[in-house]
Amino acid sequence: MYIPYDKIFNTLALFTSAKNGVKLKKIGQKLKFKNNLRYISKNKKQVIKKLKRKLSANEKINVAFYVYEENRWKSQSVYDIFENDERFTPYIFVTKNCSAKNNMNFQTIKDVKKTYSFFKNKNMRVFYAYDIKKDDYIPFDKMPIKPDIVFYSHPWYIYKTQGPVMVSKYALTCYVPYFLATSISPIEYYTRFHQYIENHYVPNNLIKNYYSENMKNNGSNLKSTGHPMLDYFYLNKDKTFENKGYVIYAPHWSVDKNNKLHWGTFLKLGKEILNYAKKHPEIKWVYRPHPCLESYLEKCNYMTKEEILAYRKEWANIGLVSLNGDYIEMFMNSKAMITDCGSFETEYFLTKKPLIHLKSDIEPTPFNPAVQKIVDSCYEAQDFDELEKILDEVIIKNNDYKIDDRKKVYKELGYENNYAAKNILEDITNSLK
Image (cartoon, rainbow, N blue to C red; front, side, top):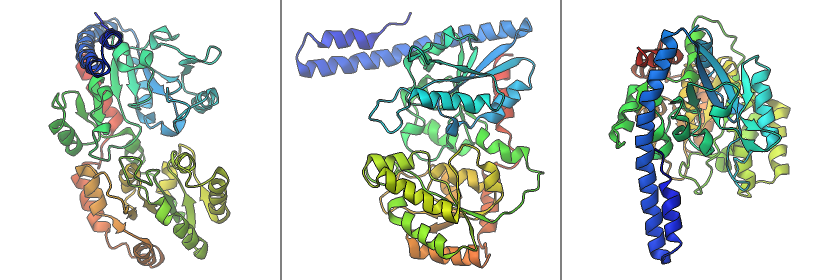
């Protein structure tokens, strides 16, 4: 039985002092959390039984992928492997995140339609999980296809009727982050969402072990499988790519102290890197900002909308500007990357090409053990003078003197011949035997 402890204690708080009211609300939240965990555990047993019955009866298992932004769609290989397995039928459920209007992540119905079109144009099975006419969320069990398994890619801004607690009543819940695990921050692995999820898939054992040591459940829902973002490299390991010589500048959005990451160096280096690019037209440049960077700069009054567009236009005049979700092939055709974006640190690392990490002046959130290994094997620049020296040596003179360091770490982290989608499929099918 699901009991809304938070609502009960919030009501009780109305009839007492403000101080006691705060205490009652906290008690209600704790009871709600514990009750949700029991509720999910009980539901999982029933869902597993249902899925086993469907398999034994040769009925298709419906797999839904919860998506609210096409730029963060990173599970194509997982969708494809379910598509090619006769036991499953995958679907995309396009919805809207529930962030507030004053939040930089706020979405409109126009955004929902854009995401829907992205998948429709790829000829994938896609449904609206958001009622456009009523401007309201559709509970997943009320969808035309009721899911048996739901994959999430975001741990935040999920409307409650589409969240893992409610969904656990009829479907197995899984989580593959839209980003590669990067920092040691609990926000990546220890929110209530992460504890409600029944299968949380992580890139490797280094990350799994670190998370497990810091979780109350000892990481009982963690599975080390690799990440689907990296499956492209496995699936195309025998493909020959043209080296078009692109040098990619990919700045992160966390440019100030108003966030917990502090990785971003755009305010310090953004203009200087652009000026350097203008002075070196012999290099083919690509500007690839984090999807949140421009909105964050505008929201925090670092740049006006006009200044942001003007800056982007300057890059377009001398090279390419990349803003869409399909960029891996561009990575493979490139020569090097300059970035302070933690997720790109790992993703680009698999190209085995030179990677230049920009260090923030603000004390950053530390990387997790796996990403720190990668950063240690790459080039690092604290300021523009250091960056210019690296670019002169590695890009202009073609002296990639850290290539052996990167190859060593590549093997140590187990990225060689790892196929995450296959590992995820096997994990789920093994749980149903």
